[in-house]
Amino acid sequence: MMLAMTGDDYDQRSLQRRREVLALPMVALQHPRHLAPTNRLEWRTVPDAVGVGPEGAAYAVWPHSIDSRRKQVASYTEAGLGAVAEIQTQLRVRFVQPLPGDQLLLVAARARRQPLNAEIWNWQGQRTGVGQLGDAIESLLTTPSGKVWVGYFDEALGGRGPEGHGLARFSSSLDSEWLYPGGSSLPSIVDCYTLNVDGEDAYCCPYTGFHLLAMRGDTVTDRGPAPHHFADGLLIDGTRGALIGGQQAEYDQATPMHLDTRRVAAAGAPRRIVRPNGIEIAGRGYQCRGPNLHVFINNTWYQIGLDTLTAPPPAVSI
View 1 (cartoon, one colour):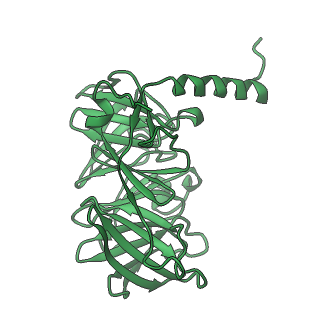
View 2 (cartoon, one colour):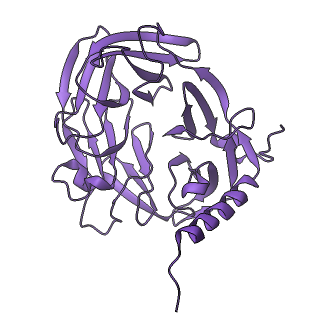
View 3 (spheres, helix red, strand yellow):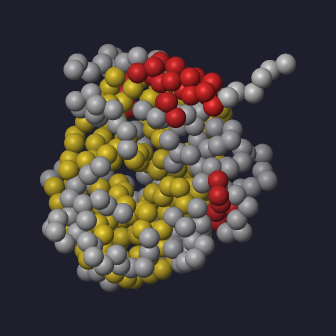
């Protein structure tokens, strides 16, 4: 008869797993860039939302120091601060993404009290559209043509809107275009743990089956079970890929993988992602676009690509 695992047993197992992860070869994040509002006295220095657009620029939404309805939205590139807009919105903004025609998409994660949880703005501070993208949004990325891919977390399960499908795609005017087909032979999406949008295509590796799913247009391809579960991020480049994160102790683990037409398999030993100085990456936020991982830690924006993640040796000298 097997005894149930106690809290102490679970903690000990997690500690042991963390020690194993800490022993992995380290690979350092690159290209640190500091994000800040234009005036630190007027705007808070912790953003409500950060996002990376399909062109590789970062976007941040800074709340006003006094009036929570006022926001400063700014873009950032390798050259530094780009366009800046000031807006007023009632949304509790969790996601920011660009849309074609110098438009900005701001979205709240929840839609229970405010069903219209998406707004489109221009850089002149004018709201040009509103929409409903569903409740319990976990991830959101736009494409070069303006499509909006949305993944939902498990509180969306059973919802009557797009959230009940786990994954949805909307037009640039926020009309529902495609919903992940429920009741089909495809794996169900209880929680869209990962979302990668590369060009117009999307990829995810959702709970509970953790199959790698590829979406091109309205077609879904099941690439089979992933070699590592509970990843927070997913990188894809042709037949190469990597799963970023995992269960608790594995939050900074990168698991390289190989994709072919039949299956997905691990490809080499996992590594541990650290900051350029070797410090851990706790308190981070991941965003994945194609082969590139974008990591936001406090107000610093880092990047790392598959080439670096998979290049031997991946060690950092401290």
